[in-house]
Image (cartoon, rainbow, N blue to C red; front, side):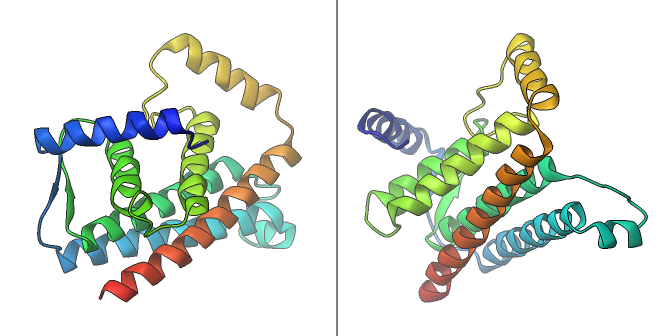
Amino acid sequence: MLDDKKLNELKNRVKQYIIAGTISKGRSDKEHINFFIENAKESLDTANIIYDVSTKQKLSENLGHINYKGFLWVINTSYYSMFYIARALLEKDGVKLKGDLSIHLLTFDSLVHYFYFTGKLQKQFMEAYAEAEKEAAELLGQKRAHELIEDYFFEKEKRGRFTYHMGEKALEGKAKTSLDRAQGFFTEISKMIDEKM
């Protein structure tokens, strides 16, 4: 996933972002850190709730949503938990992101630049973030970090593939994987944030 070619492209992008002022270093802002941490927690809680309602028939019945299956949203909110906790870590380190580019791409590139290349973050957590980001984009058909979804035909092809050809159990498995990744990522990044405080 994070092969040498992609890492070199990322290095070049980050150099350009720094020159342009899109990524800069400054003073960390406790209010922003707490904002991102709270959003990460809420996103992870939401993913867990949706997963539980989707997998526990009695719970879904008690809530009046018989046979509810929200696995696409488990994937989405799991990714957002990872995104927000990554933003909290960057903010704690004083990394500021601005510009018209995808904030998801900037977050990922900055995380790799300031924490992966420096050895502060283990490779598997970077790959978990990238994989969750990719799955969320594919399964939800929305613009995500790399803004790969740009035209109607690609969107239509993916929607058809996941809407009509992916079985419920396969989707549930992807949702569980996303949720597990997000929980692990949240735990590890939270430890790094706490160490810096």
